[in-house]
Length: 115
Image (cartoon, rainbow, N blue to C red):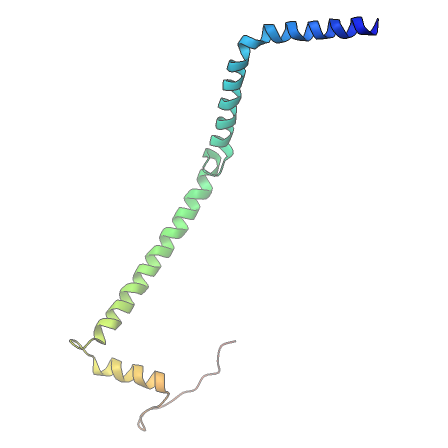
């Protein structure tokens, strides 16, 4: 009796598989579509992360503007230190800050270092 039940189950499962076999490629395609749709919505570059990316872009744009301004200032100072347009005052200021000396006619105010 047990053998008969096992054969019936085997026959039943093979019949079910034969009926479902034409639909397996369609089921696989549907699963792929669901997978990619899910990641298009909530993935790293998905639609639901759009506000976060916009905020990050605004922050980075602001940082870029600040860095460009700093670079322009540094390039202007470097231009003044070149041989063609040497600024004597800037050269003296830079030398004094590096060496740590001052002119006897200068007033020196010492500040406590920032903690």
